[in-house]
Length: 224
Image 1: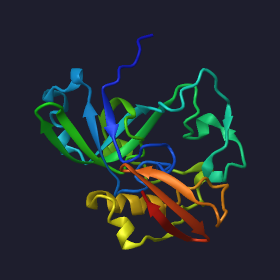
Image 2: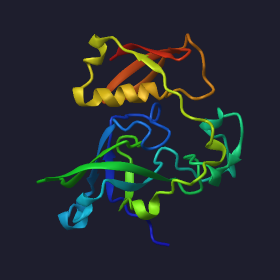
Image 3: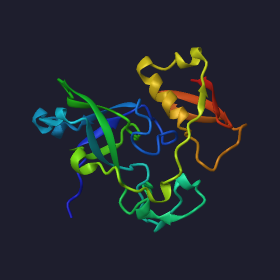
Image 4: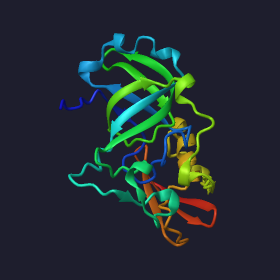
C-alpha cells in the first residue's frame, strides 16, 4: 500500500487542541490558510479552484496517531457519558487518524515563495496540521438537505454570552477577534465540565486566553 503524501499544512490560530471547534463551519469567522509543501506549489494544481465557494480538506489527526484503536468512543455531543461505535462518530481516535473538513474558500493568493495559498474560513484544524488532499465541494452532489443526523439530531448547539473587556480583546489582532469570540461563544469546554470556579485556558493566535463559565455566561479574565 502506498503511503499518503502530505501536500500542505494549515496555518491557524490554534496552538493546541483545546478550544478547536468540534466540527468545521461551527465558527465561520475563523480564518486560516492552507500552505502547500514545496513539491506541490505549482500554480497549475489549483487552476479552476477559484470558482468554488467551498472545499474539502482531508487531513491527519496528527496529535492522535495510535497503534491501537477501540470500536467504541464517547462522543462529546453526548456529554462523554455514552459510548457509540467509532464509525458512527467523527472522533479523532480512529483506526486511521484521518479527518474531513468542509471550509469556505475565501480567495487564493499567489506568493513568490509559497506558491498558491488558500485562504479559508471555518476550519477546525490545529496550526501545522498535515493535509493529504484538497477537493472542491460540489453542491449538486455533496449537499443533502433531507439528511438525518442520527444521535446528534435534537441536540442543537447552544451558544454562550461572552464578556471580554475591550482592553483584553485589543491584545488580539483585529482580524482574529471575530474568530476568538466565536470560539468562546461555542463553549470550548468538555461537555462534562461545569465548574463555575474553574479557570480554563486556550491558545489562540499566539495568546493564552483564560476564562471562566458560569451558567451561560463566559467571562474572559486574561489575554496573555
